[in-house]
Length: 169
Image (cartoon, rainbow, N blue to C red; front, side, top):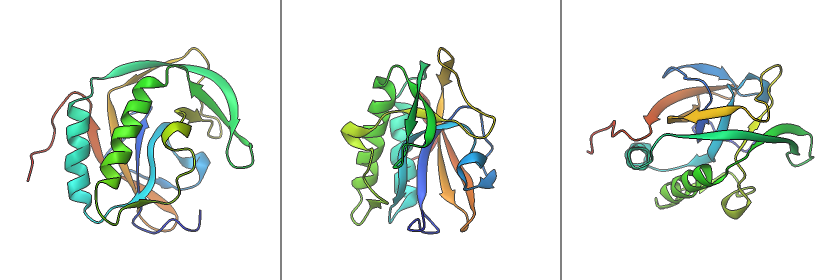
């Protein structure tokens, strides 16, 4: 992942609440359990993106999904994940969030692998943390995370689903 720049951002649904400002190491096993919604991207105006994401969150009701079967993901097929059984709610968010990113001129994703029609919501196994087939996940918010430096990520914003949390400016 050496092509991720310092100020890249990602949008995720955390499986447990995280505090704004919370930092964690970038390595896969140090991430809190999450479902990626829009992977690493650059936008010229992060404030505009935050307002747009807030609008999307306000129009999206909280939902529940069931964890599905275990599969192997990644470029080398060596990453254990559990697929989300009902993809539709996450696919709808993924599509809207990717459109929000790309609506800004000069915005881009680090790469476009596993996006759009290839997007499959999943929870990656992390060290001793994982979800199991049949578990129910309540999705009530999403988070904007940024690269704080070359080794750490930082939670910078939380967007509650079904709630308008930010004023337009």
